[in-house]
Length: 515
Ligand code: TNX
View 1 (cartoon, rainbow, N blue to C red):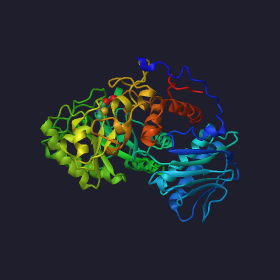
View 2: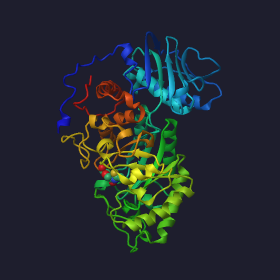
View 3: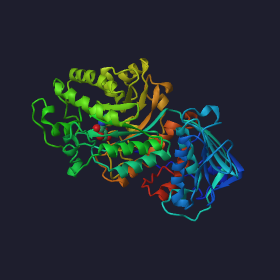
């Protein structure tokens, strides 16, 4: 309740065209350090070139990505050419000479009258620098058609690197299926906020969404419906590879999740042999959880898991494979442990590190595994014990990060079991001091999951994700010391014209001083 009261009402309305010196700070997530040079302005024109470090294919790829981002709205050619040695006029993407502090994903950005220079140690760093550059250009840069705009970039100097290694989002494509184009659009939206992980919830009671060639009915039958009874769908392995590559080009790693032993009705419906009684249940289009379980004593279960994990691991270049493990309410505790004791080594055998919802800590997965806390309490003994053994945790507390929770009682979409989550609720917590026994250095990162029981279109996805997704992205990237709701709300408001230009639907929270 009280949360909805508009903290912003008393604040002055910002002017639409912020002065140059302020534009340097209108970046989300907030950079570690941004020093404006009010005397300098770079101007992107039809003769601007993108120069990339000679002999570095990674820089050339990021150059092509940047050109692709800037061409539609500017209408400029923006040729991408290699540069030897020192930066020249135009935009430069270099893999040398960055500030020593930028590390694996950070970057340094220098804007003068003549040039924009992004320096990083890695391709990931260059991609992140590109996202800052996009946000320093006028909002119309997000438009899909040529705009008549003076394309200036405010002069100055940025040095920036992330707080946590993982800044994540999750999309549930099982409850409702979303086609490849929607997933790619979401990936583009994540990239803008320097999110580097997309967890895809690929299988649940209502649908199996990835082709498994050794068990073809999982997708063809198990993927044939969804919540509410629509036709569902699935990704062929080729489409899934395409998603992985598209994400990779934007510094986003896909973590595929095959949820088990619960949340498996779609698989059980597809193959009678997976059921303890040999009888396949019907397909399911409701939204209850916790009624299905793979058959733990059955040997065939582990042949199935082995095949699925082998195929999914082979399609996945990332480090992790997520095996779910949540809400296994119809699996006895001893069975749950027995099941995980068989399944965890299968994941390892195929070269992946197990990721799971935090309940899987009951089965003591390997130290390097990736437990994901989704509870709403700030105490969890199993998580604290795992951390004491050296495991790092991903934080997705449902009452802070769940993008499928309603904003308030009037939100037409979403659920409310973890409470209403207004923008300020999503922003005002500290991942480094949230769970008892889990300190800053024990946190691998944060993830914002979007469950899709109530969501059927991209417009609806965007309405729930914006503006809370950028809030979680900022918690994952920006230094704890820069945490400040008023400043964040101001920067967030400045994103709205960008969303408008890009056609991104968003919730106009009364807490944010929108222009
Ligand atoms: C809980 S969070 C679930 C999902 C639901 C979600 C809805 C978790 C690991 N399991 O099965 O979709 O709540 O908010």
